[in-house]
Length: 340
Ligand SMILES: [Zn+2]
View 1 (spheres, rainbow, N blue to C red):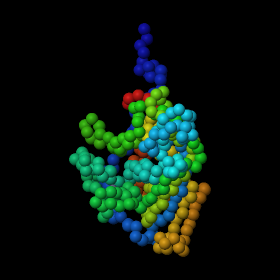
View 2 (tube, rainbow, N blue to C red):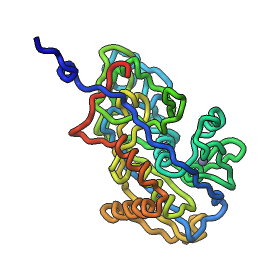
View 3 (tube, rainbow, N blue to C red):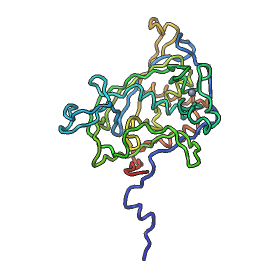
View 4 (cartoon, rainbow, N blue to C red):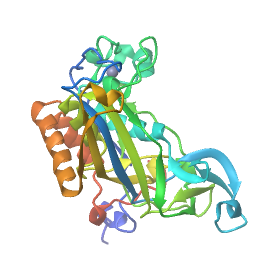
């Protein structure tokens, strides 16, 4: 009698693997004094970038409130957790965008770990991470995105809320196992050693038959975002562009239900404006240069390529991150429906 091979049993259903992977830690943290906000320095980059976010899977950012489905313009008769809105506009809050972009920037540069975590587990961390960043010695991520605590700093970049421009919502049942939760940003192995920074992979989402209903933004919808920046070096601007996913080598993953494969976002640059000189700070007589279309794409790629070449974007970590966050529509894994 033929024995059933493990391969045979696997063929009965989709191959299910855990929905996350790790990006290795760096050996050292690069730290420099933060440049401050009081003056715009002419030799550094100050300006803003407008960008599009296209949803490739359902997107759910919780408003923290439940609503009657008919009040949201959806099929009547349900009570759903509503998507985040500003006024009556569906949106992604600036803080969510900043958090996601920061986590990518942290992973591919010589940056520290989130501060609370450093304090709690200093003993088990690689030596480079045991000391927190300060105003006099801040890592790339803390310089760009800011830090809290004693040396509170607002950072050199500021995100706006991204508003829905095209598309609408629908009701989606999230598998009960995958309630929206922040999830640990790093993870230990059986010997309690840290494995690296944790990122959820993209995959085919599968709604549950039962479970809580959520209002999600449909795949194929378009949101418009904007980030402004002050006093960035070319390397820092390259890192920011990279972490936004503007090369399309990887896609961002944002919002609730990440383990259930929600929240895959394709980003595209729309308009870059750079200001020149001190006057830019006052908004008068500012020399302004703007890029759009093909010229903008080339400019964005040039900044990223330069930051790679200088080593500010770390080749090994970037390669790992791109492998984890790759979105290939023809080879997308099924999202696990059970425990993993
Ligand atoms: Zn830091």
